[in-house]
Amino acid sequence: MAKQSCRRVSRRQEKSNMPKAHISLCFIIFLCVSFEIFMSVNSQSQGDWCIANSITDNDKLIKNIDFACSKIDCGIIMEGGSCYDPNTPLNHASVAMNLYYQAQGRHLRDCYFDGSGLITIIDPSYGCCKFQYRK
Image (tube, rainbow, N blue to C red):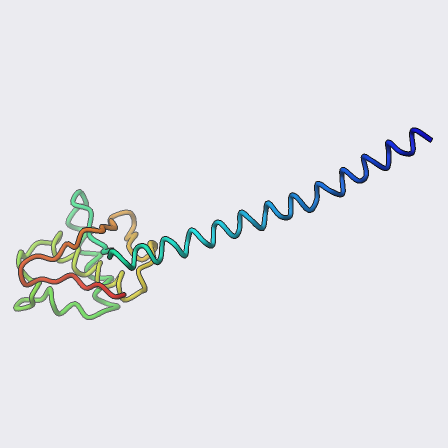
């Protein structure tokens, strides 16, 4: 009789562990979703922009400009545009990459540009050149 009661206890313990594991997994999923929502709200409240990494070579920056400008209007970096000066690949790439990033919904993947994009929470606008920010 004593052996049966031990078996029953161990089976109860096994069964009681299952709901705990299920609850833990649900809690982890909840935390992940909550964190993503918090980060989205937080980034929207303070602003975030995509800029080119200053150590990126000019050939890569030009490819980034070509890619971004094939998807969105880059008129502001053309001659006469508000972000034309300074006329450098780094400046033009930063503006074009940010325009693309903003147009795509500000997902981290849309500022990757093969590792040459950076997210900043400091507005990179200068003079008459206003870096777009979409809420």
